[in-house]
Length: 360
Ligand code: 13P
Image 1 (cartoon, helix red, strand yellow):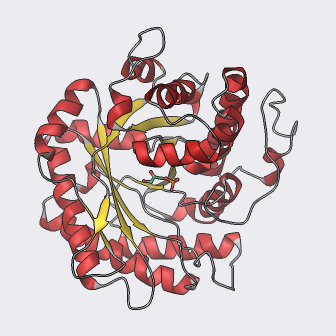
Image 2 (cartoon, protein in one colour):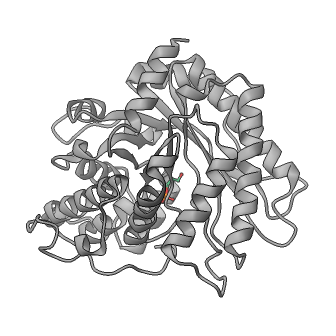
Image 3 (cartoon, protein in one colour):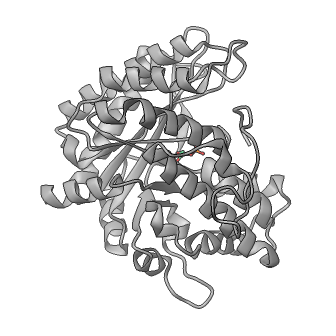
């Protein structure tokens, strides 16, 4: 293991005001999102969409790394240029999702365990040879009546830690993603308690499995009330609860925290990240960054709808969301950036308003 290389890559992923773009939807998830917009669910449509994303001009200005899926990392542009070359040429670090998805956890109704450890060592070697420099594994934890159970939290934490150790052995920076889901009517406090317990358990296991904290990135959820909780909180309340939880559970040696968006609208995700950086940046040991999928991609996907004629507008929408999140890292994002003409970039597609959280 080359420790310094891991540390350098992890730091670069969260340097300055950049963050990660997750574009690692599995084929079934990507197809589901395409189906909603009547986009053909074919290999070629998925390839064309990923080419649109990766060839967005200036993407590297605010995106440090992209997370790919197994199908995508092996694909090329229409002109034959491998996606990996396109990414590197844009000054972006290629990464890869390596988990095999969340399956029912035996003996634990309503709970999931993420699979994919079998054969992982060999797959990591192959991905590294193709050009990946970091990897991602997502665990999901649901909140509900009597859940999450200790059994679910511990099983997922052990899997995350074993994955992270294997990544570092292979020279890939692990992006450790324990996602506490937003579904349910639980309060902000309940989400905070569960997220804190999950993070404490994950870091215990990372320590037990001898994972070098300086060479990893944490990808957590923000601390949120459940989507159907009658009491929704302000942006500042979410920012405070999230940072309080992280300060209690995340060691200072971790270089960066890159949030998932979890189904929030792009505008709300940017507003939350901005509030955290405005209120806490000078008092926290790690960079607070983004690793959003839907909160960066969704407007672009809705504009594209599989039509070549919409590609440019879709790229502009994608870049706009990436830039909004770059501004949020600096604590300079505001709703005014969402109004056409107000962000000094009149050529860009912008979207209005802050939508209520919810799955797109
Ligand atoms: P969202 O930002 O859409 O939650 O996706 C992040 C991700 O990578 C999920 O694994």
